[in-house]
Image (cartoon, rainbow over all chains, first blue to last red):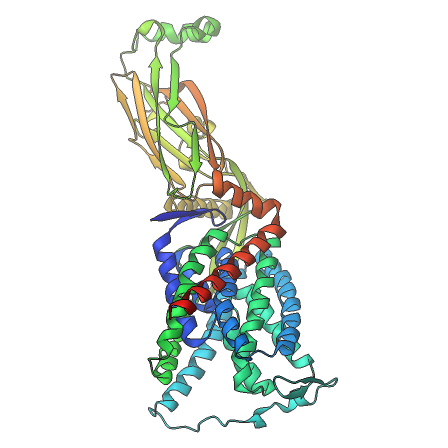
Length: 303
Length: 262
């Protein structure tokens, strides 16, 4: 069944998009990630203009993170103060990101930058996860990561102006979470990703937040930043396709619920291994897109 | 040839007299308006009509018909990717001030056989005869390179097409052609032009266009699609709020629905 997307200006197979949303939703429910880093590249492979893909995937992330954030909120797993500070950073990040986006669009390099950042981030995260999963499964030897607050970064501890974050049990400068939020905001605008898979390690390794509040806080922050980013895209690039977003959401929110159920039945290390392989495949496909002669040498920009 | 000569001479001497004697085209299209709705996946337009010869006399050599459907003109910037440091990225670009967003030509015989290049470019008959107005004072070589790139790209997208045998003429009077419009066409006023071409009996010489007729076709987004598109342009902030509220609502609804079920 074909449905016409009013902003993208082309018709797509609705069933395919819903299934894509569902598949990514299952993954996001299983791994507690927004899934934007999979949605956007897959939409681009499908032939949606990159700008529209990025902007509409952002809208989907908001919907996908709602139910997760609600669950963690009920369990008290959200450090609201921390999420607030990071969201403020995210707000500025998304505004700066929008300016960057416009500059890159004008210079004609936005597609390359999007692909290049994806290759870097997916390759980096994917290989870390693959290594962790293989170590955990006992396939290769290696030291297990140490638990505890000893990981807290010395650089973060040296920042001035400390605040108390009671829910996280931290006494640190708000500048570090602000900076993390800022980075996530920039990436959200540029890449259409929530940034959950970058924020979570950053919160654990840089800030030293306890695991029980990390996922909930990152979901709350992703929720706020992706909502703001949708607004930024709607006002500046005008590339948010509400029909595309709804199709993705319908599949995505249902998929997320099934994914959360599946988590209980599959060994978590196998899950991580599977996710690592998926991430590396997407990253590799993006790399091929950069290195191989593209199908279309020419591209059109409307003035 | 000898029977024709006085006619040509007369045409040169007294154009007014001949004007009343010229064949007239009576064109029509299967749809004056094309609405882009939620299920729009392209459309097929039938361009048809009749050739009305003065006094109902048909010429002994059959005339040819060419129909052109063209979309609104858009200024565009065409970028070309090149491999730089192992990565394919946009390197060079060129502007075109008047590239039609859509162009389809169908004719009863290949245009090359009917008219010479000069006539073809006057009437913009054929994809290669479009007046794209490249701007920026580029070298002619680069201009041609980019022009070829644009034509090739749009041809493969189905936005430019050329069918040398796409017009069917019945009994030398009725003609019809089917033109396909892909789903990604821009909205606007399209023009369907019909040309009646009298081929020159001498194949080495150009035939001439004896009659032209035009019909407008409106391609619009309608209903919901139109409102969404307008809202995203005119009420950006409200549109953004609507998107956020919608995604929050759907996420929340799924969470609630599944909590009850499991």
